[in-house]
Length: 294
Image (cartoon, rainbow, N blue to C red; front, side, top):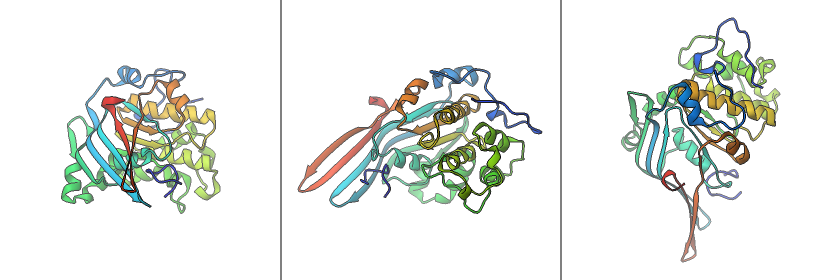
């Protein structure tokens, strides 16, 4: 298991387009530089809303070589238009928590997990897991989630343009210039005809970010989105994520070691509490992400 996974060692500019980009991705009417409160930005744009994510009493365990790592999330709520930064050391379970929120990994137990992509549309994810209704999770992921994993996860056989456009095409969305707009914002417009293998690590990460935002998802999850990019591009990346919350009312959850940037932007942070217990030669390491005691 790679390092950083759960508990195991190891200038923003507008561009002219033939078709205007999706409303959720147009340049914001307020600046996103310096210290920006995500909640303040939301109040200017869409106002406070109900939680997109409502999670209660989640447990996920991994064991190896006499050590058990337990991810514990007593309570986690991210409102519509809200942002949350998961901050913690490598191996504290940030990536695993994002995988669960992305419906890509199933916890060992969970009392409640509701995903409300729209004001009157609530999906009981916990009940679907319990009933084995995993086939119903795929449409939720496709329509309502945008996920940027650490590795990028691009399809090697698709050109950059097609990688970015893929979630829109799967949903039958028209080509409105959003792909070109995002590529321009993220500095990969000149790479659209290339395959991922011809890109640098940082460029592939930017393409993955564009793909995650292309269809205007209700929930955006990003695992170390600024780790492989230069400081100027990191500013653009974070601005785009904040815009998605402020203009489209999306919930944004970011796992990051870039604590100085998170603090500068004024984003709410959630640090885990680490507990270690040893009994009869076996060690339990528990990482607790709890909003009630952050």
